[in-house]
Image (cartoon, rainbow, N blue to C red; front, side, top):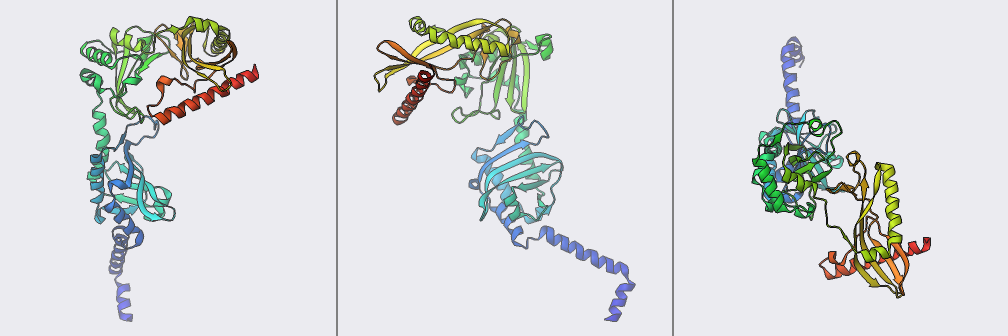
Length: 449
């Protein structure tokens, strides 16, 4: 034994080589050999993950700022999830190692509410697959999931170019689709997914105007300042026709859409096409398109004069109050104009009185419309009248021909029997809720009168 020890001491290079070999073997065992429960759990999970176990998956390009202004691709189609799951299931032990996270993330795949091995704290977690600049990927987890899968301070890395390319291509393919003139050239009325949200602009007329504008050589190479002069650019009129998404569940900026807007500069229109974070935008001169967008907020003035005159003493103070407060906030207004006063509902109340509900709308008349900064639900019609300052529908209670009370229902209330749900029981509940709200408003008005 002494002789052997002496020989090792006499040959330090041999001893160093043995030590290095031992250390390398230990490191290789830590990185690549899944010989403990935590390692095995991670590999088993990723090789057996299914479409059903991923509640939501979305890809986006990483940004340091403007996080809301980025392309986000939701993997909603079955084929998308199939491709993702197939790639994840094919990850092999040899392609996986554990190390700290790194900088330089370019694309991210976010898998939300994903099933993971169950524990006392729950069985779902959020997993981010981060694509770094060299094409490798690393996973980050919510804190509970990370405890199950990773050593402290480390995460799982995957050397898998096919998965990295799949994630990055989801975004780059979408970016390549953004071409405003090409989209305008081929648009049809049936392509719009939200025709009910375009004001009084018909989908058919809009599609025809866009196709015509795309053919004309009227593109303007102008900055906002050049197009609108010395004053700040003000886009007073805007419509957002979408070609993706479902209005019933909600159309978002991540659905492909046009954004068409114009201001006081006649016939100059700005058209953008794309989605949040990736737009192709042009300015052009087109009278037909300009007129469509500028008049998109117009509606026919309907005022039942007999009813209006009957309740005028209650309505005028409200309009004057709005004129005074809006003037203080936004500038000078010369007056107001009633644009709608129409009865939409009446019913007998339990005390024998009659309750009537009227649509009541009016507009303010600005002296310098170019200086208005629109806020909240305010908007201008094509004649530069300011809307969106109303106090909601007007309810009035009468008994034996005498006006008992009147109340303005506020902008968070709107009811019309024509707009009731098609489901019978639901429409009954809507009517009950409307009566309750109106009764409360009228009772408060009587109390404070």
